[in-house]
Image (cartoon, rainbow, N blue to C red; front, side):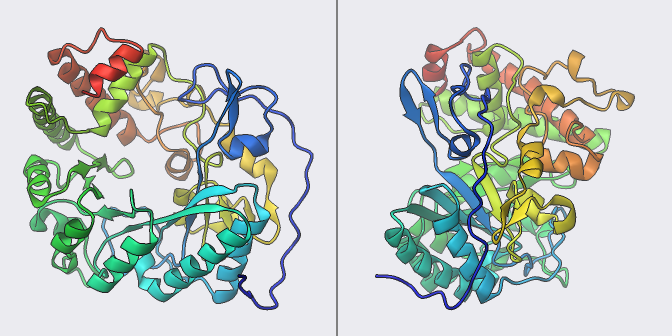
Amino acid sequence: MSVCLGNLTGGEARETTRAELCRKCYSCQDGISSDVTIDTVNKGEGKKNGAVKSSPFTWFVFPTNGCNLSCRYCYANNAPGIMTKEVMHQTLLWLFNKQPHKKFKVHFFGGEPTTQWDMLVDFVKIGNVMAIDNNCEVAWSMTTNGTLLTQDRILWIKDNFNPNAPFLLSIDGRPETHNLNRVYHNGGGSFEDIPVDLILKTFPNLECRPTITANNSLNWIEDYKYLRNRGFKHIAIEPDHENIWTEEQYNNYERLLESLGKYYILSIRAGAPIKMKWIDVVKEGLMRGVVPTGSMCGVGKNSGAIDHRGKLYACQRYASYNEPDKYTIGDIWNGWDEIKLFETQALCREHVFGVESLGYTCGTCMARQFCLKGCNASNIKHMGKRETAPPAHCELQRREVKVGILVLAELGMLALKGKAAAQKCSK
């Protein structure tokens, strides 16, 4: 079975002689074998002890960069823009014919992808056929605010998206907290339009993503309890690193972390452990035992992004800034601009420093063993270069590490290292 994409043409896949590279990644102390080319690094493959490791490449696709909400902390520019059918078809050709990955994920991003629901459905239906025709494996998912999900759409997602992680739901907590920042263009709150109970009935293990901001952190522990009581088992909190916090607001965040830490300790002792990303970062730093080296993240290596114009980016955040002339590194017709791609891939954690004039000096920071050094895209957007993290990132990370160490100390986990630590920390 095949799908006709019409008389659409695009540039042939480029053949480029690429230097063989060796990279030491964040998760692998031994690094990747020197006989692996940049193509195989980008496919997530590398040799270790004779075996080939592989992880699916994740493509972030933007059916639109417009949104039905106007969240006050959103980093996206949200200029109007919708993917045309021609660009959609050319994107499918790129995904299934012109890039090297045969096993990958497609994660719809935005804006709000469900505002272009019909296109999203067509994308998946045609993509599934092309996957069969091209001997590919593809898993579909998205990030959504949930306000446009209906029973029919939720059932369609259940039948067609990745069953283990169909979508990431953006929800900030109790209605009054959520509606502080996640508002419509007219300023009205959006909480009541999210079918939370229907979503959780269909996807009981769904992960939600609250954003902790300077104006909602004071009593946010009540929001955490609320989300747990509503049925969310996996709550991936993320503080807003890109805006300004006062000293009082930093202190509020630290007190919140202390409350969450108590919650975490009690869950461990009760035999029903819960996961908290900021504590996991401290665990990993203790097990690693050295200042982290290697690349910032999977930017341009195990992830990439395609916006509604068909422009290629190293990750979804670069694409969200909606500045194609500044951040694009190619397009689906001509492929990657390798120099620009290497510029994003080449940044390592040891290249990033704090803002010394503001008192953020990585060399003497107590969090340096654990710090992820900010976001590749956020750094250059807000600080003018990838090598400098925003001050808010530094201060929030220091508070997280400080409280995380105290939590693990109370649990008797500070001296653990290696595989035994990983096993005990996961219990």
